[in-house]
Image (cartoon, rainbow, N blue to C red; front, side, top):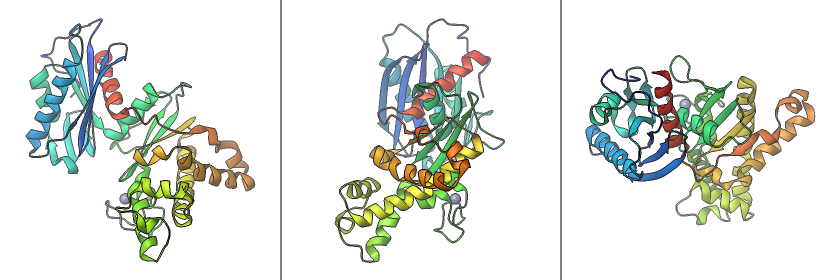
Length: 332
Ligand SMILES: [Zn+2]
């Protein structure tokens, strides 16, 4: 559902946009004006007590976000990034497992409440749009965003346009099969990329190393976290460094595939584990440089300078959702 016949915002010269990043733990919002200036941000806990309670919690967060503004504008549109599968056209959350939403008519509920156009999309797709619009100093028109957390997902902007594909799966590299004999993935297959390099995978690799008798910093981590492994590697722990290197090589190979598939100018990495910054990029770059030694193709396309970490202080899911909401106003 892109807009309803009942709303009457017309062509406003000034207005508010609210973007919402809906996660299984928190709901993050941002308030933008018509020029995409940020006027407020908010993070609240996700109410998972029932599907409707989750929606009502989001509605309350949107109202609180609007209250952060100075009252000079009216709300014009709402955008929401949601994990899982969405029916964008009908405004229905098809399946968001962690939110317990199955065929939930989220857009209809929010339009009833706020009487403005609302739009939903996949969380990583909108975060990609957020990076493209809000963390793109070179103005790249071809850009991939790699979200690394409990899983791994990729969003792609090509020629300034967000790719979605027939099923909204365009760029879903987290589930390309890298090792058919690898760990079982949540999708039911073995050895998907995310089972090898996600933050969850870093923790599993560390647990396996400890189980095999690794000494040093890893056994002392309680609990083991991906950040803990990266910090231990930075402090010189050999077992942690081995994990960091193995993950880097695996990621470098897959990011090569992303570059070759889409021919992008920028590959932006985001997610908690990437806050390790240069220490996260270094093993990836090292592998690309190794490939360059023997490959003219690698020398031609795998330029380390196209790799960067997204600004960790920004919620690109919420920002991209607001940018998506703005598209409603220009296409209606
Ligand atoms: Zn999978």
